[in-house]
Length: 138
Length: 321
Image (cartoon, rainbow over the protein chains, first blue to last red):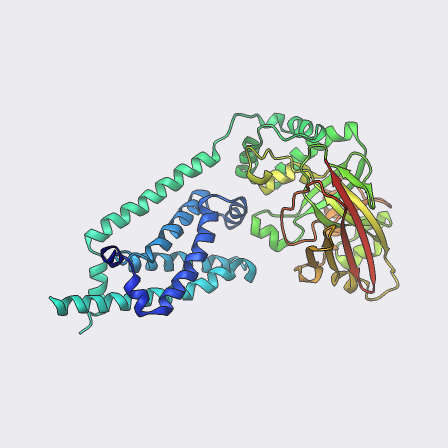
């Protein structure tokens, strides 16, 4: 059991409860938004048509959001995954702003973006600490 | 000592991480492409048969044959005037058999139009039997209707054709009826989830204009200087037979005054070389937040109340198989 937990971010979550809380909230958001995009829900298709973005890109984003959300729990991939999700959310927020979307449409991306940057910072700091600990142990 | 920023970046971007990471992203792109190809696949159809297929579906309370094929055609075509051309061909077949009952506008808000990528409002014409009366129980007869709290504007005179804004158009309107619009969902749910069609396809299908239930009437008092503002600030409450809320809609939360639908109808009629006349009825469009609310048989009736200034008008309808 301990070996399995070593591959996850459990130790980072134990050391930083804010990271755990933010990750849980973001996971819920990515599961909702990612599922609707990955399964090509018709309302998402309407929205992407309106933005002039192709449907394959919508599906790709949905799958990337779902797998990105999983990566936030895996120590090996958490930092890279959170950087990727920052790129996705920054793009989404920008598109909502450029299209003048109301808060009901763009609000979720606007709220999730700073949260995602904070999670990325926490994972970066945790990686630094783990590398330091590894070098000291060596 | 903690490693610096670049050391962490280098540690993260090792080939052991980059290669599987990039491969995974490429795999996702491939999967998304395949999924989209499956989504876009459809049977064969000829657009020349669209009007006839749409009429058969509409007239037989059925579903549009080759729904997906037509949907992909109109979606990829993305030409509102072409969609209007096919809607008029569909209309011509309805007009041979049924009288005209009214008009309707879809997506009247320019912001919403931009959001779904259409350049203008959509326009439809009601054909068939007269609208149901207040309190009627509507037989579904195998059709799928969307339930839409709505209003029907009654034209006062043909001078409305000169109106170019809401301030002018209101002078040529006699009043509004409380109205539940029941557009027919013609898209085949086996081919299109939730029968949802692309907006350009929706226009070609005449916005599903089918029928509705007319309720109480609110005559416009043209001497009231606050009439326009009073109409802007309406609250529309839809309730279930057990008294629970179905939807609440505040018309002043819209970006534009809902009377713009009358101006847009004038523009569409001019485009078609036609004119509105006294007594014509124009449906405003759904006054609820949700896009879809399919009608099912119910015990009792649903009620919609319109709070217009100090007045309340209502409409009620039941539904049976």
